[in-house]
Amino acid sequence: MAKAVAVYEAFFYVALLFAPLGPLFLPDLAMAAIHWLGVVLYFRGVLARYKGLAPAYAGFETAELLFLVAAALWLLVGGRYVIT
Image (cartoon, rainbow, N blue to C red; front, side, top):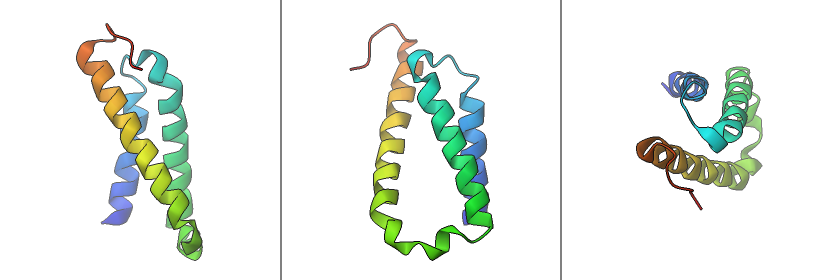
């Protein structure tokens, strides 16, 4: 199930590239690239060997959540307001 979620997230960020994200396009491009790299590493079992990266992973998940909130706000207001 976790592998399916990893692939779903990677496809989600690629699909989001086609949304009118304005200044959030480049962060979305980075998220798509990071997720696809993560899928490859996850399927090869590489990530399981680096349990010491848990704090960095938690930081990444926090950044991902902040990005998703910013993207949702941008899409909901149609980019009419500057997100600060």
